[in-house]
Length: 373
Ligand code: MLT
Image (tube, rainbow, N blue to C red):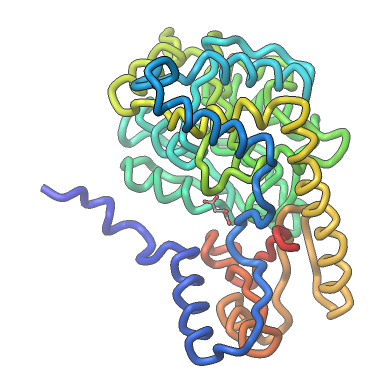
């Protein structure tokens, strides 16, 4: 029998749809230069220390002494140590070695983590939302509830009155570019404690957290009892092609008396043979002093794009929300997001993402990404 949940998915994935339309436009307008504000793909090369670490590792792989076969599915010890040290350095918190699980990027774990929960469990997410959460939840047969992120709540929804088993939170947010402050995240942690929910916190954009805002949910008191954090080297270190990320499942986190850390370890043993050792060698270098310094150059550039782009859009008379790396932009009167996408492509040669791809609340919005040079 087929998994009927496939038929409940939106027919097309928004980023594939945009890529298709862009290709069609390019085919008929080969001389037009397009400005890409679409999918959040990085556009600076890897830090040289990262590429050197990977090529050195590749060379070693061709020797008897340096060859590496299967490694522990949770990640190499060098990388797990480096991740723990990075947590301490970037937000002053202790994450323990056995709480870290290296992955091939955030998206795989977003879907995989839902296997910790029974089919039919309830999951809450904001609308608009990164479609990987909604798609993975639908495929898993979960009951999806949404809370609107709109102009009334400053695009930062607060917990509802009803109970959910699982909550997705992404901050800085994809697609709105808004970030929860400490007080905002505290409300979600307290809610999760009160109703016995687990927060899946997507920190893929933590490199873009505004100063004074939390970079990790574990900066909130009590979060270790209710939250899992999913992180990625993609945006902050330019690893969208290399593929490496990590998930932190705290030892203290329990559901119905069972620790989720041991369940996730068992799940990974069943379903994952570890991230590429080359990618992991690169990730260790990325977290070195030099790697962090090199990555910051690109991140600072993307951050400065936020202001440049925001001003340009404000000058067009548009309402612009968010602080990056995405801007959430209300379409001018008379357009919905899909129509405005077509208008921008044809007339301004700009590629954006129509907001409807992130949910009904996005119907009259488009998303601009700030990953450009
Ligand atoms: C986005 O543009 O939303 C992201 O780059 C897509 C992704 O990370 O999968």
